[in-house]
Image: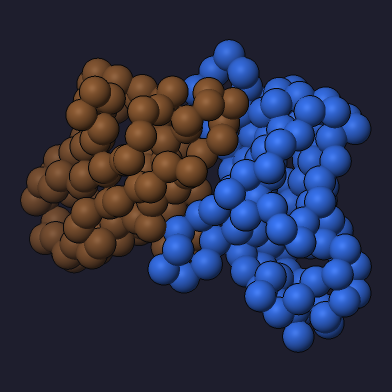
Length: 109
Length: 112
């Protein structure tokens, strides 16, 4: 399967700060998804982004498939943004996802 | 309400005692998957299914079985659980035509 590396592994931010999370993957992919796992363990789909840029409120994501990386931008961070962010490429297009080990984000007031 | 449900949410069992974790979705989704989450390893896909009677192995299928006899249900079967299957398990579903993936609340399994 695909190897997925996420950086940084841990990030602590002051509320209101901006951040960029990176995801590198080892092979060509059919698509890529970003997820947020909140401190209670719930997993939420943030973006489905095989290529290009998407924005949803304070979050945006960019995938450059030819260079095998994706970026997640969080602007004006809030304490509710805390949790673990995962990227998950899909090599086959059949929802066969390979998750990275995640970036643990802590936003402090 | 659109949701993915899993049962049980917590389970303690002993080595070798067969168990089934159920997963059901009410959104008529084609795609369903099972994942396990272990500290430091992220989520790893166990099995995935593109539709009824269509299943395929994910990254870590050893020791698990699945079936997809109905579109809404995708049970995960551990025929002979072992302690290394102690983990947090998630079921997920997605429509073939839409992007959003929905996860169940998770099942925490402890095998003694």
